[in-house]
Image 1 (cartoon, rainbow, N blue to C red):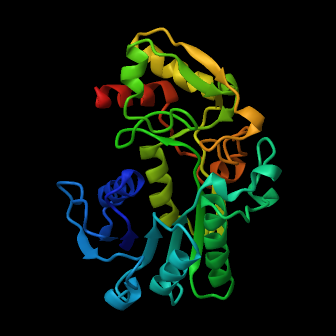
Image 2 (image 1 turned 90 degrees about the horizontal axis):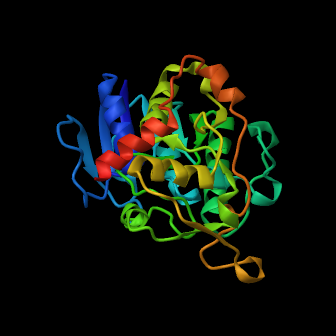
Image 3 (image 1 turned 30 degrees about the vertical axis):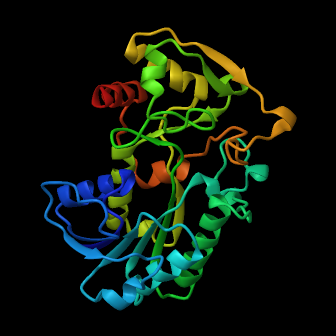
Length: 296
């Protein structure tokens, strides 16, 4: 398949590029050109800053069978992706669990139960982007699939979940030094991290799944854990004792605690599992061990 990939040099988009190439797809990436493409991959490259340029004006989309937008952040970006996939091409949008309104996010939330965020933040912007793509699909302009991953981990990113230690470049050094971690509510919040390679496989697998057209999917990892478990697993790989203190924002709010991380983040995976019953996931402990080795 001939794929137009928006993104391709970031943590997630780079993994999608590598997976698509490994599956034999021809890929052309669209980036600002600031970061080099991953080495050793034969991919076309279009330099475009979607914030100031119109990709559809720079790219002849006719040869492409599918558009994968890894960096669709708002309704403006979504309209660009739709324009590139116009005419009934496949369009896969990577959204986020933050698209769900946290005030209506119950345990093991199903896609069919979604109440979307209307806030002026990343969750609200992503939800409005989804709405643009769903509308275009409903009008027959594109064949859309929307994916909502939670915390994605693995080589290419820093470890740690928010608020206090999210994607921290010093986390491993801090833990080796015995520094105390400040975890929101002691790390009792539930999460379902997914390894970046697993998520990339899901993204590319959608291209071969006609049943995914017009659908949206929770894309969590297979293991439910507390945030404390997440850090305990890292500590075990480092061979250190974990020191934790509970973090309770005064008045219930703090600048580094957004609306989306204050509660449990766990989702029903029945819909994706029914679509991809043979999907095999990296066990969390193995993925963390590999990540720690990669970070050194």
